[in-house]
Image 1 (cartoon, rainbow over the protein chains, first blue to last red):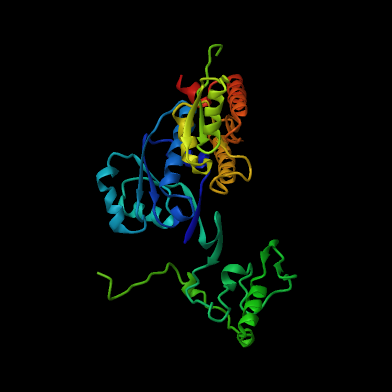
Image 2: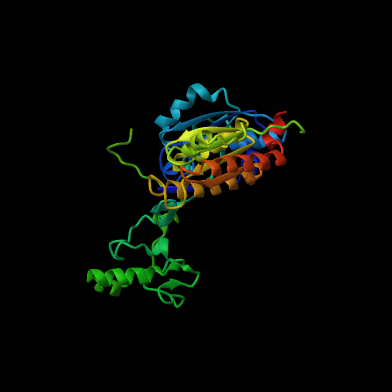
Amino acid sequence: MITAERKPLEEIIDYIKPFKRILLLGCNECVTVCAAGGRKEVGLLASGLQMTLLKSGSSIEIREHTLERQCDPEYVEELVPMIDSADAVLSMACGCGVQQLAMRFKDKPVFPAVNTKFMGGSERQGVWTERCKGCGDCLLGLTGGICPIAKCAKQLMNGPCGGSTTGKCEISDDVDCAWQLIWDRLKALGLQDRYLEIMPAKDWRPGGGGGPRKIIREDLAE
Amino acid sequence: MENFEPVIVAFCCHYCAYTAADMAGSQRLPYPSNVKIVRVPCSGNVDALHIVKAFEKGADGVYVAGCLEGDCHFKSGNTKAAKRVAYVQKYLEEIGIEPERLKMVGMSAGMGERFAQVATEITEEIRRMGPSPINAAAA
């Protein structure tokens, strides 16, 4: 999922200060799962904004709504009947959702209420960790299902650096050395020979180095 | 200010604090009428949104009353509630509401006396603090 965290109230208020009627939008997908921008978080933020502004002597009208997916045009269309009654839109979706709204409603200011963080998975309840950098050329088949791009601070391709000590990365004792994890797993699977394969320098073009990326499925595209 | 009577919302778990309130009643123990009880199936069921909305709608203080440690009817609802209360306290601080206006307390169903004592103490503390900044601004 794409993970996110709410921005500080102060920053959000700075964005919306000049406006009186705000449409506050949540998203039912990734940001709901990582408890950053779903229906519940929309309610909490609306309440927090109302109270903060009331304290400073100003008032604001906030309409709350949560879309099934903000990154999909068909769901964004749902907003057409309510968009005119808002001076600005505050989105609790990831950056993809915010941009989808900005593209669809060109005359409406759209502001993000969350910081989009990374593509990650749940480690346990309330804990999410980065798992994928979207490099566009997946290596997991060679690395025992552990990604050296997402999990190695240096994104090394051929084994650990000298900063790997007792399985930990030199950046922090809380961070496992990705290559230690890869080696341990390959060994457990009896696939140590994969470790000996020298991986060439990575081509970063599929990973965004070649500019913004796009996928076109001819059979689906209209 | 002199006549200020705080509104306090108490989210009380059905298996402990709510029964303790009943017990306080049976024992004829008085507690302040400022405390408005909301019965919940478990303190773990009290959401951040319930607490924040209570403040938005005019509560001067809120407390969540759950079972004693290790005694939750649903195993760990009370410990989850305590974590949630701590989380909401930080959010209240960000909003500009004193986090001390929100508390987590524990008691068993038989503790009628403790229920009355907690209700009295919290009411007194909030009375000393005065109206919540939201109520003060709205006044």
